[in-house]
Length: 268
Image 1 (cartoon, rainbow, N blue to C red):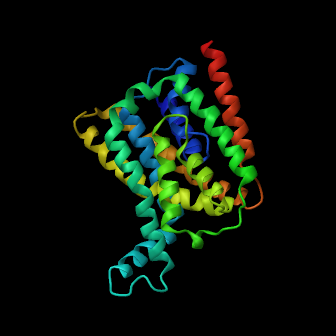
Image 2 (image 1 turned 90 degrees about the vertical axis):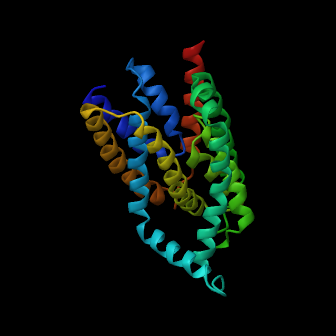
């Protein structure tokens, strides 16, 4: 791996992690299309950690409020007049499905699901589903109206993000739109969901990294990928939250459909 590869792949991870176009798909496809060797699990861990740090930095005030709200719920009567506590618990409920699915199907996801044909299929299917949700969704509900049933529904949808090409942010925004939430509310809940999911993934991945014993050059590539991914991810979150106040998700759905068609054209 070269430093230039680390920079490009870090940018790719940062740009695609929170846009509804699938970061895992692009991290798999970009090296294949450019003829690079696979960057390996260690680099993916570092790049994903950079994205996690970016969402923590962007929503730092929300994280503080949610933490305080959650602590309040542990006291008698702590749920009354405590919307932050309700939202904190909703994030917890939404994280359970993907946590269970990830532990159960981890091996299959890391092997069979990295097939470009799988990525092409999920890009097409979930791209069309995103378009339908953006078109048919009522877009009337704010994040304060979120119930535990909504959280579980969106959390179940998030399980499909374990398959490359699905897009975690895309599939959760799709579920939120079908549930009647506004684009901005759906995106905010989706990004906040990325925090507990990212923390759980980082714990599991760094456990694997401990047994790999990377050398000095690998640490350099990983560190560069982390920094570049974090900076680009922060910029994307800021831009997308502003975009969704007045614009639709249709351009991203179209991109996904074109991506899927191009993949199958190359394969055939």
